[in-house]
View 1: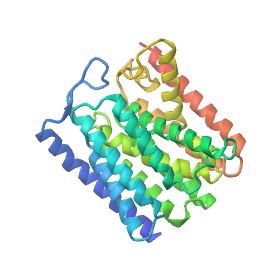
View 2: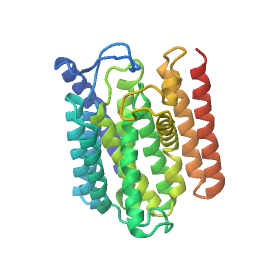
View 3: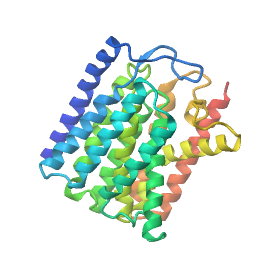
View 4: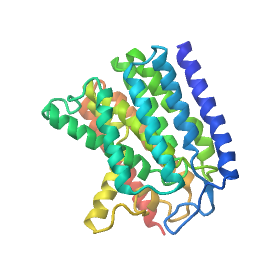
Length: 330
């Protein structure tokens, strides 16, 4: 417990202080996200604060793995996370084509299969091992990209990552999945994201940028896939269910309407919910409340899997409906 508390404090302080230093540096270098027609902010804001968040978590994971306090496959995940951060930072500074980024993300997910001890069993035997691995790569690639797509208003991804991290820790501790050092990894992820929230709460003083959202999605995705591979696919689905539902339903709606899906837009449920008053804080508080209910559903699923799944789906549907109704009040 002492090590857990110390790790939490160290990652939190490193992420919080590092974000402050990076924010100052970004302002000095004029690395800013200027508002455009589809933006949800009205003034230039430094982007790239995720450098501090992703680095704090990845370095903590690297230190734990090197000290033998985390599974050895964590080393590979850290290397892949740093590679994703490097390409994402380049995209924040200039522009890397969507095709190049997608290809790189697929390559990272394919390599990441080596860090899944239960690879080939993420879908619990419903698919042959080869198809299971292919579906895992597809799902992981989609997840780290939707993490980037959903990072569109102040506070949303920091709070989502903290919810997923702490939810994983609760479920992992109850099921034994978090043994062998995984609990430390889960809590470190949550602590790093939580420390960013004061800087990113509306009105945000800094944005994560791709350099933060993409690696965080990759790390969260790895831990969720680990949980699913151990047989606990229901809590692995429930914890990120709001992000999965909002991003996937929006993508399908855009495809159905013939839009160019690689272009920026403001059609996510959370984006539409801003229309009446632009109150990021209120919208994110609704999402945090929904995520707390999803964490509770995930914990319940340890004993009552199917009722918990039904509850989580109902919570997500209610949240999406509430966001949609809020968006229509304009």
